[in-house]
Length: 280
Image 1 (cartoon, helix red, strand yellow):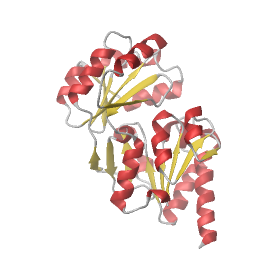
Image 2 (image 1 turned 45 degrees about the vertical axis):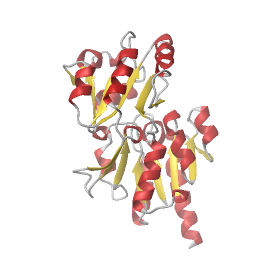
Image 3 (image 1 turned 135 degrees about the vertical axis):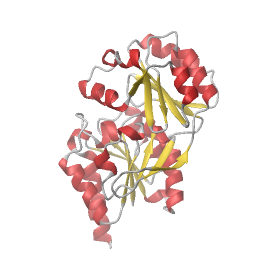
C-alpha cells in the first residue's frame, strides 16, 4: 500500500493543521512500512517540514505533479527525482492573457513560488478565508520584479497560477486559455486558475512514482478534494474524496470519506491498515 494525499482541504484541517488522529495514521503507516506521499499544488517550500520529516514520508509530489522530490529521514535536503516543466513561452502566453485583468500572477519554480510584491500585498483581496490567506502568504516569496522577469530567471518553471475575485476576469482568462495549446488548466481553490505543461497533473506524477518504486498503481490509495485531484483519484487503485470535496471530485472517487475536519483521510488509512493486518 502507498498513500498519496492532497494537503489543503483533504489531509489538513480547515485551519491548516494536522490533527492528532492524522499524526496517528502516519505513525501507523511508518510502523507497517508503508509510504505516505504528500501530493499537493503547493511548492515544496510550503509543505510542512514536520510532515516531510515523518518516518512514513520519503517522497513529495509538488506543484500539481510538476516536481517529485525524495527527502531524507529528517526531511532535509530534498532531491528532485522527476521534473515536468512548463515551457517559458507558454507561461508568457498565459501572462499576456492574464495581464488585462485584476488577478495575481504566481510563478512556481525551483520549489518556490514568486509573486510581485505589490500583488503579494493585496492577497487579502483575493482570499477571504483567513487560514487560506495565511497559507498563501507563507507559501509565496514577494519579489521586486515583474512576472516575466521571474519566468526568465528561474531554473525549473513548474507552473503559474492566478487568483481572482471577479468572476468576469475568471471567465475571460479561461476563454483565452482555450486558445493556448500544450498546457493543462486546473484549480485547487474556487477562486484560482492553475496552469501546468500539457499532461502534467497529480495523476501522472502518481503513476511515475509508483513505477519508479516498483509499486503497482492498483496498490495506491489517493485522497483529494478539488479539481486538481481528479486524475490521481482515477489513476489510483482506490480513489477517495473527502465529503467536503467538489461534486466532480466525489463523482470521480471510488469512495467518499468524512470531511477534512472529521479526519476522513486518517479514518480510511487506519481502516485499510486494520483490514490488511486481518487478511495477513
